[in-house]
Every structure is written in structure tokens, then in C-alpha cells.
Length: 184
Ligand code: HEM
Image (cartoon, rainbow, N blue to C red; front, side, top):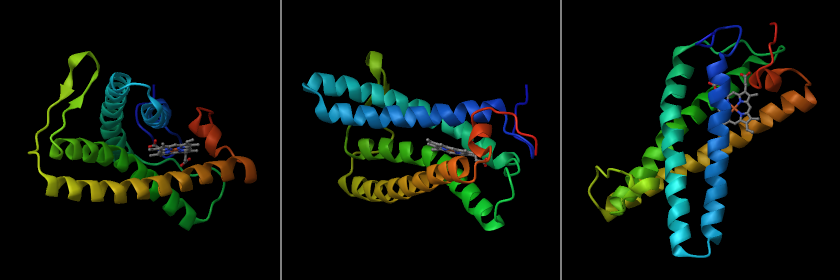
């Protein structure tokens, strides 16, 4: 099996982890909505624990993913896109991968600075290595807001690019990310 991306194709690991991350992120957003509508504090807490676990999984997968992205060739684009678009789309993709490492750290740091423990299902928890400190929390929350806004804007651009390639340019960019073998 091809373990790393090369100039001609994404590895199956890259493709699988790309969609694992997308689904984990979606599940985290859905849980956030459910937490907002939970009928009791106990249910809210339990859903919060599951959300924390998904966040931890997202973080661990994303460490590998970011390293794999910056340490291997990005396959050549499908078709003949404008070089500026290629540079922008690749920079956005790398930033999205990095954001999935940094944003979970910011959430963990914010909870620690608030004096809260990040609880997981089954009585587990993630140790808070930072002291409770209101000023620190404000700084971390400010950085998180900036990072999360930039991330959402980048993700919107990324999805727009995928949709444009698929429906407007009618090329195999999205199908390649879904595992289709594409000859370049
Ligand atoms: C509906 C959601 C998404 C769609 C339709 C989508 C689509 C795509 C497509 C078509 C590519 C291949 C681009 C190319 O050929 O160069 C790609 C690559 C990439 N996407 Fe997405 N994407 C989605 C969500 C995400 C999310 C949530 C992230 C990260 C948080 C992400 C990060 C990346 C990265 C880093 C790459 C480069 C390949 C890699 O290292 O995985 N994408 N995406």
C-alpha cells in the first residue's frame, strides 16, 4: 500500500484521514447543537464528555496529518488550474490541517485557565497543566476566536473550491479525494 503522498497521487491514508477529520468535525458541531438543546444538566455533561473525546481524537489524528502534509509532496492538481489558485488552495489546506492541531490546544488551555477539567467518558479526563488564571483565559479565548474565524473562512473557501471543481469545472479533484484513481 502507498503510505505517503507523492507527486502523482494521495495515499489511501491521507484520503481516509481527510474524511475522518471532516466527519469528526461535523460530529463535534452536531454535539454542540445537541448540548445547547439538552433537557438536563446531566445529559449536557455526558454529551460534553463525548464531544471532548472526539476533540481529542481529532487532535491526535491531526498531528499526524499535519506532519504528513508538510513532509510529503502534494499531488499535482487535476486539470490545468491557474498557479495562483494552486498556491492559495494548498496554503488553505495546510492551514486547515494546522488549525486542527492548534484549536483543540486552545480549547484545552482555555478550560484549564478557567479551572475546569476536560472530562472524557468512563471517568477519564485530560490533565490541566496550566494554572487557573482569568487573564490567561481571556488571552487564549481571544486567540481561539481569531483562529476559529480564520478556520471557518478557510474551510468555506476549501469547500467552495471542491464544489467549483466538481460542478463547474467538472474535473476529478473531488473524486480523487474520494479514492478514484486519476491519471495525470
Ligand atoms: C465537505 C468537506 C470537504 C470537502 C468537500 C473537501 C474537499 C477536498 C478536496 C477535493 C481535496 C483535494 C484537493 C487537491 O486535489 O489538491 C481536499 C484536500 C484537503 N483537505 Fe479537504 N475537504 C473537506 C473538508 C476538509 C476539512 C474539514 C479539512 C481540515 C480541517 C480539510 C483539509 C484538507 C487538506 C489538509 C487537504 C490536502 C490533503 C491532505 O493532506 O489531507 N478538508 N479536500
